[in-house]
Image 1 (cartoon, rainbow, N blue to C red):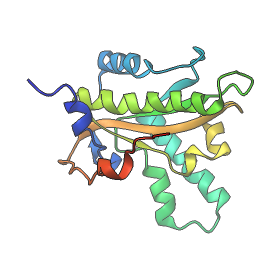
Image 2 (cartoon, rainbow, N blue to C red):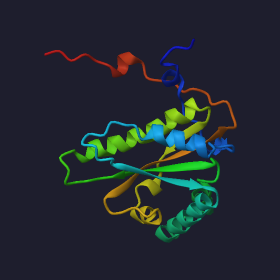
Image 3 (spheres, rainbow, N blue to C red):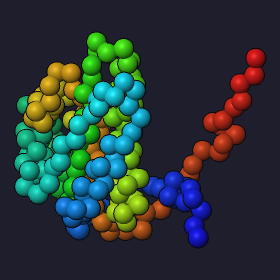
Image 4 (cartoon, one colour):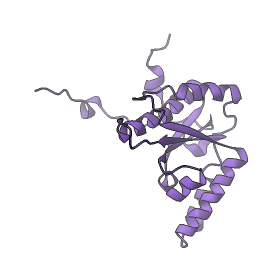
Length: 189
């Protein structure tokens, strides 16, 4: 029997460019999304929503981002434009995790953002549990209001991340993790 924390102890991100078909089928995707939205949610605000990018739609989004990036920076190199154009081409599924922020709520905006961030992390954990690879990425498109408009985001919404999900094409090496002594302390009065 494996250790109860094995999934957390062994979780790692698979580079999005090393993810390919197959991705989750419709039934598996529904289960993954249902699990992903089971997050702490102070005030029951549901301060998140998900946008699925698949197939031709994700390629079209990449094309539109490349055009946007060229309009913003006319001196953009061909290689950077190509990177923007193809950044969503590899994984069969990209889930855009969006925070829906209510500035008038008694729940601080940071807690609403963290709740949406938990959805993104649950997608990583869920993908790993199901045998898929995943990577949570942001990049300039996560912070750009024109890119947000391409996704149909409202003024009170922001991208928390693009979670790429698919089958891994390489054995992903683990990276060095922090020593607990470097990041844990005990407060005393």
